[in-house]
Length: 169
Image (tube, rainbow, N blue to C red; front, side, top):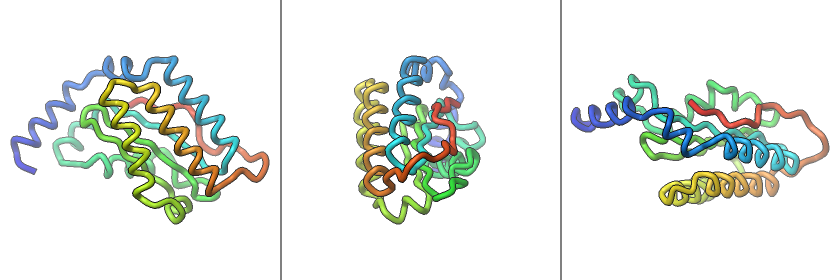
């Protein structure tokens, strides 16, 4: 990555404030997201998390860490890989870079192809470009829940292995 691009990106991350994240994801949106995740997880055996990051740590931005690399790191940091059936799905949103990534655990990754996940990412990015954070996030979560229901339908009561509340970093 060219020095000018690295500097520009790092400055964008440094200037990205929490106000933008709060405007995009106000409390009522966060509650609706948590409710959608909870309801969806009643229909399948997956574990869904949403992590919204206003900006990467500056050393990561300067070092050229991609949104995909950051999503993989957060997937590990938040124990998404540690579900009983290896069925965690992370929706990662990086506001400063305007990037969205989905990371699916190996149990799910075997059944759902990357093009399908790209379609869910497209739902998010198209909606976010229009400023529709609430509706597009709920639409993407509905898509994820439908995919997980199709491939990992519920087989009765099970414990909730990961919190359903979105994480804002």
